[in-house]
Image 1 (cartoon, helix red, strand yellow):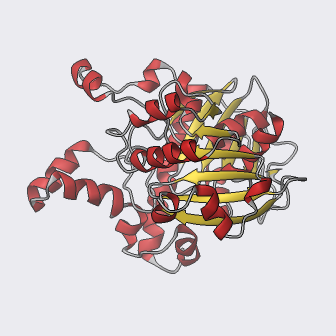
Image 2: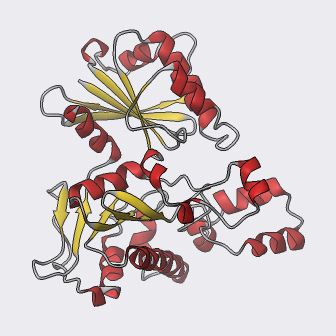
Length: 358
């Protein structure tokens, strides 16, 4: 039996896979107090939840951010935890909790191998022109500001499934949407950079924005830098445009019946199109487009419209709704010049597959 954990800002989503066929058995969410409990070890907490810990053969943990030179996977050791801790100033919402948990788990666990997978590791070989911003060297060096990327596990999987020597555009429709251009299994461009604000809008964050607009809003409203940060990260995006505090899949069901929801999705689709076009230009063409992420099914209609808008590339699609019984299914027709796939696997399933391959 194998356990894959996704480390969030103050919780861990644990998925358990069976011992034989690697099929997901169940998922549970552990909060901050449970995970960092002084009274119970991580394994005792799992046992309370009904997991037979004696049969756990391996643990893999997925982290959204990682050290600059971290590989996938990294064996959990003091050195890599120390390198992760150095990122606390850059990612204060994620790193402190992750470091506390990893240190605790390292003390408690002496037998079961623990592997760490970082969503940023795939982007270590981004070209310099994509990696850096047009800012003064002095400020960039002091702040260590450069692109780190996001959704590396999804994007690298899309590239692997598409085959070597291919030009791939990978689109992840998740809590945060990202678009990545990949050539020969190496990333060449990615929509999300150093903070959650760059790139495409999310449920709560604004996405690309004129920097001058921030100063203008602060001047007009008197907002502090902290209030402005909260507004851009937690009160914008779909929430900001619609004023509805519901999930993307619920908003998708309202599309066509509500003008605010329509506007939000039109902005969202337009932003994705721009990054698709940008990736296409940087790659000088495309062989394969792959859509992944937790929202890929609920946004099938939007994916269809997106692809129709770029059908000048020679994309010919199967009729929607598309089949969902395959983990990696092609939705383009045999005569399509560009192959298009839907990846239904979650990051936990991808990591479990990699664990079996080791």
